[in-house]
Length: 174
Image (cartoon, rainbow, N blue to C red; front, side, top):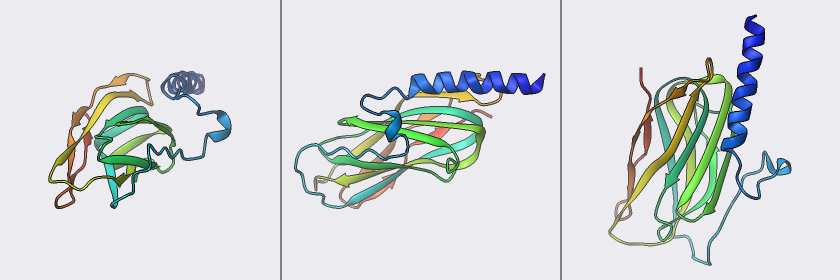
């Protein structure tokens, strides 16, 4: 009976994940290929690596995150798995300037504290400003019983003048 429940649970997670990962122009042939999107001909003034931190993750099976940033200052170059999601399946889309969507599925469950994903940016502008890094439309499901998990999103920021970074975080309920 438990094997049947596990198979049903995995099928439900696959259906949910399919709905989360419906990104335009991202076909099955591209499933393991990173997407790089460049807007305009701006020259990079440096690179920025923004980890999205997960605190207290437990049995996270499916995760959808949208990171919102200022596209006049930053340009996404790639998104990579984090320390918690190395064995997970991940896809992302950066087709909308100022927003990168990340979807992660892990049938074994994501557990612990660490990095869920790493978003890499080119820095396009030099100014004395702070760029907010906001997590929106966060959707998370448990891998065991496919129940919804409601983590708390904590905004991050990047200050251009001294290159200081406060990474955005998801804090999961215990």
